[in-house]
Amino acid sequence: MEKIWLKSYAPGVPAEINPDAYQSIPEIFEKSCQHYSQHPAFYNLGTTLTYYELDQLSRHVAAYLQQALRLQKGQRLAIMLPNILQYPVIMLGALRAGLIVVNVNPLYTTDELVHQLNDAGVEILIALTNFADTVEAALPRTPQLKHIILTQLGDLFSPIKAWIAQFMLKYIYKKIPIFQLPQAIYFKTILVVGKNLTLQPVPLSNHDIAFLQYTGGTTGISKGAMLTHRNLIANLQQADAWFKSLLVSDHEIVITALPLYHIFSLTANCLFFSKIGGLNILITDPRDISGMIKEMKKFPFTAITGVNTLFNALIKNPHFAELDFSHLRLALGGGAAVQQAIAERWQSITHAPLLEAYGLTETSPCVTINPANLKAYNGTIGLPVSSTDVCMLDNAGHEVPLGEPGELAVKGPQVMPGYWQHPEETKKVFTSDGWLLTGDIATMNSQGYVRILERKKDMILVSGFNVYPNEIEDVLIKMPGVREVAVIGVPDEHSGEIAKAFIVKEKDAQLTAEAVILFARQHLTPYKVPKYVEFRDALPKTNVGKILRRALK
Image 1: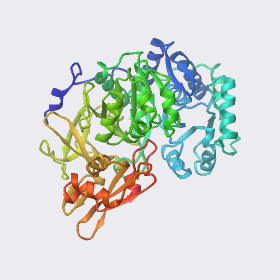
Image 2: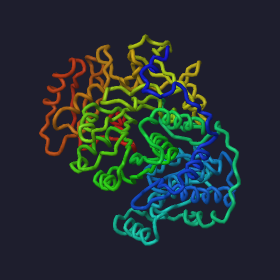
Image 3: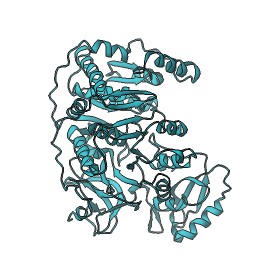
Image 4: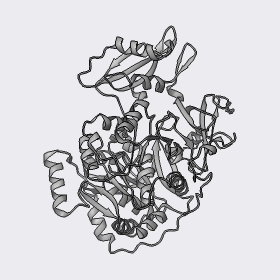
């Protein structure tokens, strides 16, 4: 297909980027640490690290891993941390030592942690003491795990503040479990010892693996997407090209509420804003919306990223509208579909459009973004970014005509080489001519804008008609009294499948199933109207707030 989307690019955005401009992620960080040395890099709970401090601390970590623990290039190090200052320090230190970073969700169960550590062959794990009991429980089943490093929330705070934080967590909030890990090394020890060790330069190629990012992908089982330095550098170059008219080097302040162990936040916030000398405001607990808003109030923030549920929670909080949005230039939504009602409400409060983007763990993650000069929500996931090709394929693997729905397929320098030690799973997601199959059903219009209709496996087949849950959800979320909604297909003896809606009500809302179905009938063709409605106190979500339809099924 002709790259029709290029005609819709904002002025100055190039058709191609250079993914070989840098050889490694540490090269980019070291350049930023030198150029913006006295500028703030990361803030968390009242403490700020400058780029100079980030450079020094990460060097101490790297030297310890290399010299004291004798870890070699290519060995895997797992990071099991929420959004705290230690994350960027350890992540950068590990990469500088030539290690492969394996990001781990701190809320994993023991079984989930065991699977990921064993699958990746992790030899060293760094965890917050809050989750040390899970680590202890996993130890008998992870024989290859040789080193455990524990850190406390306040390890990079001032001594008095660190003591207060630890006291509150342990005795007031009861967040520090009882555990027995006598072999553990403590993060503060690493910094003291590493300061007196010399880091030997590690030769890195941009084709070396930087991260193993675990995902269910399009085929179910949890597996590690191998993301090379080049994959991530490509995405950073693409973001740079896309937003250069909107963002100014060393002037940006981004609200980082999504966890850094998730690929969206890792690339879009931690890596990209560090590349341009920005300041990341790390939100440790984004479920505490009131606490998050209090942190946002302290800064003239210029950017924020999030998922639909986070933006929804923010706009529903009465104190959110009291914030100063005069500096806000970029609000980027991804990870799940952004709903029109939420995007419009967001813009009415902040006066900044909510730009929807689309990506996958397997693509580092960005594939498409709406133009930086977009004036309002348009219901699409935007245009393929520079150096990226997309097409829509039918079930036989043939490209469908423009405007017709098909499975979205991607090529580009940000696309992973495959899954770690899962060649058969890798084959399932690549066509014979190198297209990555996303598992998402999409269309493209004549201007090159892509619209996601649904996950291939979430599509509902009603009497032979394709019904897309996103479309029904977009209608029901506009109904007064509906706070959150998710739609799935359930078996039906007459239609094969029928839509069922799960709804979380607004506080004190007097909704009935009959009223919801009546509202749906006013806005949807009959076969799309949910036959069943179930009210719930909450909907199951992933760690970044993406609603889990498979759990509802």
